[in-house]
Length: 318
Image (cartoon, rainbow, N blue to C red; front, side, top):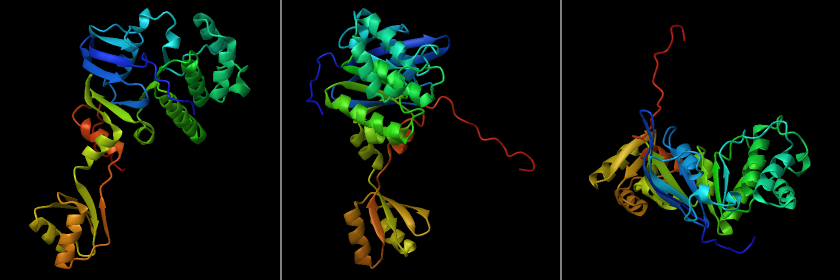
């Protein structure tokens, strides 16, 4: 792995973005910074403003108020933008009659990039063997790889990828995890928007949670998970009634989650163990609750979901 070579231009700075589409307030003061040297997850419910924010960063949408800067400058002002920011917004944005190599070669020539770089990123994306095949029949996973290769074409200090895990097979998941980690280790800023919380939990260092056009949380993943645990402990015991009496008497909140299993809120696992031992109540498991990123995300965005399924009554005969 190459030595960290942090570029002073390796940032995305979003400040006070407001954007309205008709009656819809898509962005309502969106503000955050994507820093170099780490992978930042960008998550939120549908309609939260993620795609609009990324389009504003790329100059595809104009905000009503606020700024979006790449390395301190508007994207539209950059002379060779692919050398500053590489983006994947739509894996399907490829002319189907062009070969994979010609698609990238067309982009490279528009930016003064050598053809050898095209062959390099195709190989890095695992597409060397299909470089001269037309992109039209490519699977979604292959198009994702081609889109990521295009994002890497200018060897930029900033990457911004929207749903890059979509359509990838298990080998593809492993490939992109390694790719993103390598880019961050080189001091580059990496912003990844995804609905796959499990992948982000294993991949991202930092996460920005948004809802209704504004930032809800901007935190290291570890801190977000620690906050979501809320001092909860999972307890398994053959004498649940006895454990509830002892722990409730000590001021703990105990909620049964299954036969012989409860969640305890309040005392530390060591304190719970001491209380139960002193009262002669046996237990088979005592573990601090380890929340997932999905749990933390759902709790944070509970009041920010714009599109929520209703509960229909079951049809007759079903």
